[in-house]
Length: 306
Image (tube, rainbow, N blue to C red; front, side, top):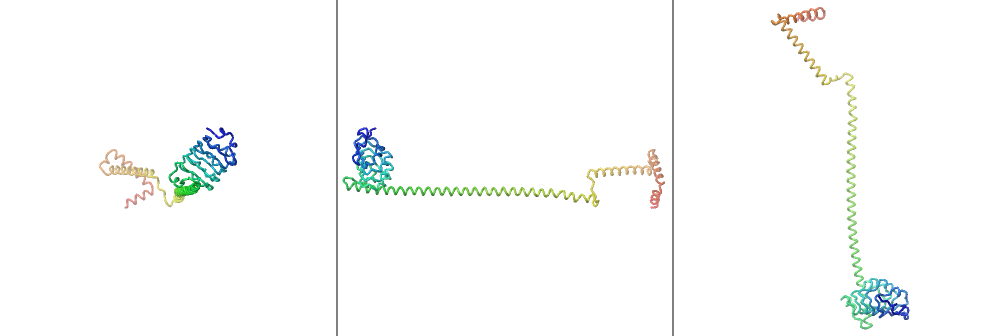
């Protein structure tokens, strides 16, 4: 890599007034730092070198008024080339440029431009035209600036359109998000209301069960005095009642059997049997014993009179 300093010594030695000639220096890159230290060098000649690109820092050389980059191998200019706002004369003859950066439209001081012998985009080549004399080069500068301003305006409109589309898309996303959040809030609200209603029903059911439980002791208390007062006799328990009926039936059956046996022994031919003779004797003794009581005697007399 060859720099100007290696062939011609310090750049200040090449400075002639405000003009710095670095042409035919076999440069592969521009010594930007050294050039930035020479703000007096408003005219810079970098023609006939091997430059394929310019560094972004080159756009900081805003003191340049005249720049010759002809007969290099430049394929493009830096995106911020428009920062060279003081540039009035620009020679880009015989390079490999196809387009110019949009910022080129900011070179409002540009009065002279040569773009010959570049593989320019057909539209840009037609706008630039020829630069065979001073008049044509001035017209080239004017037409190219106007064209680049139009390109810049188109790009700005396209950028604004994209921004608007993005804003609309963002609004739709936000509206959709808001609708989703509102739906979720409504769902949570409904679930909360349902949960509250469920808990209220459970509470009411518990209160009702408690009231029913409180009523039962009162009924038993109201019924207890009636039983004690004797106004309504209590029924014997079913088991005791069954036992009483069974005993009564057994007693009646026994009495019937005794009465039947007694009748058989006193009325039928069986009275002569030894067993019936004993039964009749017992019966007669019992009747005699009972007649000794006045009351029973009276009953028997009444019964005999009937």
